[in-house]
Image 1: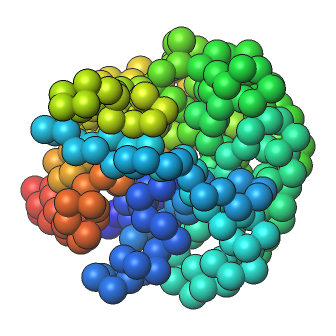
Image 2: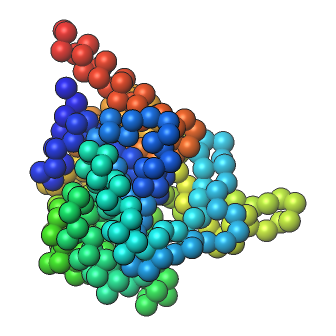
Length: 290
């Protein structure tokens, strides 16, 4: 009853494990059957391995969390050799999230990942800082985002979904620009720029000063952004941002999302996504009975 199609890829249900919160699925396999999910999105992948940021990486807030992990990942070659073969045995679509420090890295990363058997969709993470332009994220201005999407589109052998940052100058204009540049779908929102201060040291908690805020605190804003973008583009929209319950998920689906991604909720309860799937199934069953 919950089956949906995203960029031509069949999903048994619209619930996707969000990038950066689920690893490559192995750890959560101890808690539940991952094959019940609609799809799984990998950690953000870069060409070379990254050890991530130093110092505090996760900080809890009253209604969510902040993270400054820094795209820690084994690198695309190691992912293709070790992680992808195991993930293929899960029997669900795999969405590969790809990041980069400059356009050349994005292009080569997308080329390699999209050519791999088992990758169903490529999710382009444009929240990465552009190392050649002073560190501003590619996803802040439309021009920078378009330059990346335009560059990777010709080498992407799979559907291309662009993950939008809520920190963009205008997220609706950003979505429209990415669609025109060749995106087959957009996903939103990534984390909000935030910070915390240690009152004892009187210094920022994170070494990089700011971090990404996620969780229930951002949900109403994320929902508004998904609604606005869904009205403006003609490609599928995947919604995310503080989704913890099946009611939250239903709101995003009503707002125009084809599917949703769940992230922070799994840190609180590893089986949160199963609860969401079960709740949506009951809701769909009740509707069908009317």
